[in-house]
Image (tube, rainbow, N blue to C red):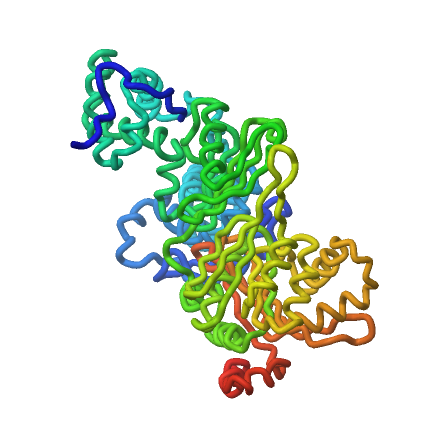
Length: 581
């Protein structure tokens, strides 16, 4: 007989907590008018002042399909203006402009179009067309000036239906807890518990005279179960596979990243205590704590998603939770090709580098895809090798069968028992690893990692925060100094140049995409300076109609320094083919 979570009386246990328009436009701007395509793909020039020129050689005739719009002079002028609209403005230009600036520019464009097509229109008609184009620009290109989006500071900004559902949840939740047996509820699978909760919620809605339809009742049960068993309001965001990051800024503001863009959601928590309950639930599951005495904590969710929590008093407006979601779909170098993050020759070079057991450092800014690249490169590790991974919060997704995952431990309430990255790296050397992989190098463990790379653990990898390959080397040198060994700079640089083979620089672009901008070899030393050479560089060329940046991954054509390693593994010919494009 299955356990019954509800009864008329509570059976025991406590309650369950739950770019710039403002500089003007260039002179003699050409306004392209295509007779066949109302929105041409490539702009001839960006608008730059209040004068627009329509060249005589450009035809302004509208195709036969558009003749209905050409019956009236104003209609024809509006059609012509609509054709050139996306050529005269970009989303960034509109965002940096004011409506008066855009209107003035549009009026100049309309006047030039009318003159080029010999249309007789009054000044008022020109203003009417300019107003029409202003509205079109806002709806098709983007908002003008700073956006006045709601800040989600209170529930009044929420849609009426959602607000009513949350109000019902607040009223029902306390009553529901009076009927629940937490021990029995914990033993039930979620579907069976949902069925029992649904029955009790139905009775409570009638008792409290709350009118909800069947769909809303199911949503209410889901919200209640999320609070009881999961992470409350965050559960729908965690279930959405299009969301890569979740950022909670206090109880009333939750942002997500979708397709590289930050978006404000309508998700909120009841109050600060509700938010702290969720934060405690996250960190307690991995044996950590977050409170006033220990307000910063790194943790992970059951699926491997990385979590950072910072609580009051350090977080002024309520606890902040940052979640980097675990991707169920494993990202490989081949999939990066589909995303445009790398090119086929660059992908081949990276695969060869991984197979040749090069010591690789992945460099990039926050959210640039360092861990994703590390996971992709690790797929080149032979299945028979013993790999030890060391992280603050375990999130690497290695596919090899022989992987030992180590995770740091914070100090306890008495301030003792801390195990940091240096301790784990030193211990890993006694575990007979073939490769050591550091999730992130951020302190004195850098010297231990370099020594491991230089003492028979070829093919080790790690990530570091830096914006360029040369900066990564400088940061690595500074981190070695953090170990307090007082080594001379030249000795540190010699250690770096002897240990490290390759730096892979990744970057998050302004269109939200991630790209590998440099593949740089560490060649050796010249005097007191570490010498490097670029194998590949990403060169930005522009952006397409959708706003996605375009560019090329150019091979420098130099002879790779690790060609000898590649020859040892029988991959020298494949490496030179990749370098030659």
